[in-house]
Length: 85
Length: 248
Length: 201
Image (cartoon, rainbow over all chains, first blue to last red; front, side, top):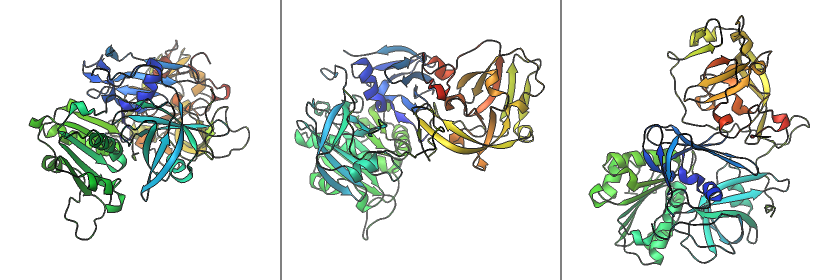
């Protein structure tokens, strides 16, 4: 296991800043293996940007790039996102 | 989870230092007054942002240590020798200084009194901070949820909140320490890293369906979480908060 | 509202000679470890490096064959898009010109591909003519896995996400194929001197 790795709650502030709702309790299904996890349970890596990986199969479920006034979110590895209102 | 969604865009708020307390040789609690603080739940954290005069910025996340208390919130920071932010917070900050913080954030690693117990809290070093927020919140609302804290520290003087934990110990709150580097004379407690055997001896059984919170450096959390699952605890009942390679 | 200045906060930054630091960067003596995923651990007996794609014949080297190629030591500055720069870093590596020596190609683009699935794209011109190396050593020691060992790309004139860790090969293409970060918000080219960090910069 990587000593660098964090949990999804490490990006809770950033996600809430963008989505205006608490996101770590949202659940996301992995497009590669189908596992369903709370965003807070995803494995977070900090590279040039942030990568959120499926805790079961390690596939990249989502990415976050923070610019100076823009944020890019990539969800190519996610199938469905469920958010409670 | 009725009524727990926090709506609205987060903004950076100004926080003023009102009190500083040394907890251990390397750890300090900083109490802040944050005008407009909406309150928080046990387990949540804040993002702290520091800006230098030339615009350079650094940002770190810190777990909230205190139970909700109006506009007051406490962070407990461990000084990392080659850190960029923690030495500033522990060495430089004085009463009256201001920093920016954003929060409270995190709904996943949260305990609400209404959820009850039994609770198993496993902390490594400064990983005790959000677990202490849970313990203090439990105490503030006089919850009788059966709670067990297993805390791994390097030695006796490194145990954060040691005296307070001693005072709060009770029938329904057990506190077990393990000291991994050195022990005081006469020590009869655990003297090794947390492992499956220790978790089985200290923690509730899987059949009791405990809510489990594990926090600390990433390697610690990974090893403990894996051991818990191997003991038969359901993975979704084991909530983890990894602090990264070196911890808080 | 402008950010609040915190009294006495400086951060861990070094001063640097004028002209050495691209705009918006800060100099560090550390070597931060940043990664898009878990560190791969490919045993050297299983490792190989390939040149594939728009070539007459793909090329492949085992670790022994790769290490038998002429290599050199270079001292370069590196610039990460997350705003840290590190000056005078010393690497040992094989020039990409050596790896492409004699390769006949109509390709104008290259994609670096890696253990763990990371990719990044560059114009072929940006890895030839003495601008890029496949590095196996840092500071006189074998390259640490957390820094990309056994071997990584080194393209110091671009932001460091263009120097892929855990490199396993180069795919030569006649068209441009954006890589992992280029698809997800970072700039397609990435010149630090023009501060090309993000889409549209």
